[in-house]
Image (cartoon, rainbow, N blue to C red; front, side, top):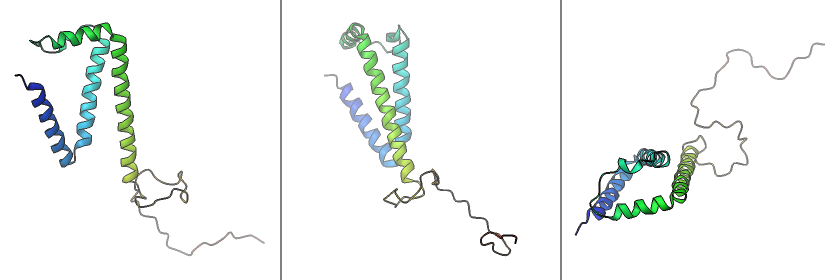
Length: 142
């Protein structure tokens, strides 16, 4: 019995768990997204896309190829939709991460802060100090 598919999924799951535990999952997700986008682009634009895959001794790939050829428009749009949804999800995750590392991490309400005056990331620039007499109000010339 050929268990190559099961071992591949098991190895992929263990690898993803190790990468997640090490904290580099965003890099892996980005690389997997780019790989998927590359394969989808190759299938979308190349008419000889089956030459890019290795030869399989079983007939499963031929059945898959016949299905894709008979429903090419449907498969093309499904593939592009999946990539679009994944990019949208990556944007949402990036927005959540930017919000988490922003200057107001523990602040619950955004009602009291003017969003236009709030920086996107924490700005550690110290305020400038002026030595001299303090200026208060405007002087009117009488």
